[in-house]
Image 1: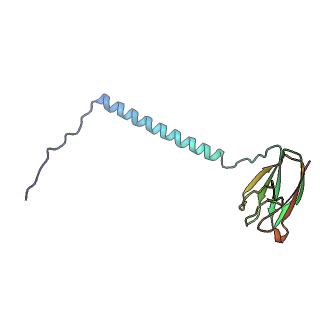
Image 2: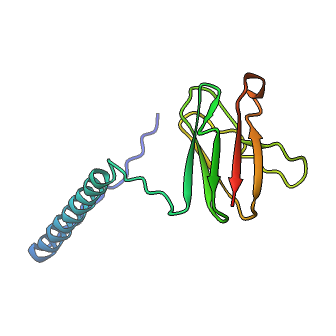
Image 3: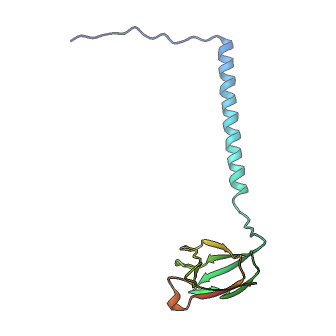
Amino acid sequence: MLFVTYPAKRLPTYTNKQLTVMKAIQHLYHLVFAAIVATMIFISISCSSPTVSSPVNETLVGMKSDRFSPATITISRGETITWVNDDTKIHTATSDMTEGGWYTGDVAPAAARSITFHSPGTYPYHCTYHVSMGMRGTIIVK
């Protein structure tokens, strides 16, 4: 059996000045790390209770118990309706118009969708999934 030996690697030797510089750099890394952690904690605390603000021209319509609330709403031209799903099941807000209609898509529980109305008129709508249960609404744009 043949054994091969390699010469031992010589560990580098550092002067006192080099060691002092390396310790200072290591200390600097620790300070930077601590600053980053402190910043992340500050951001998470300041974001823990978000404030919800609505645009000035936004009106909320709830979706719950197979009803829109309010079922009929009057808004001005250029205002936005935001449907908020306060239910445990998926809903939609779907225009009854076959041409030029609109559709929010599926609005999951605790989610919201918005549509801005630019033209005056009366816009009846329904929930695609619960129309047979009477989930209907009307938007009147002045």
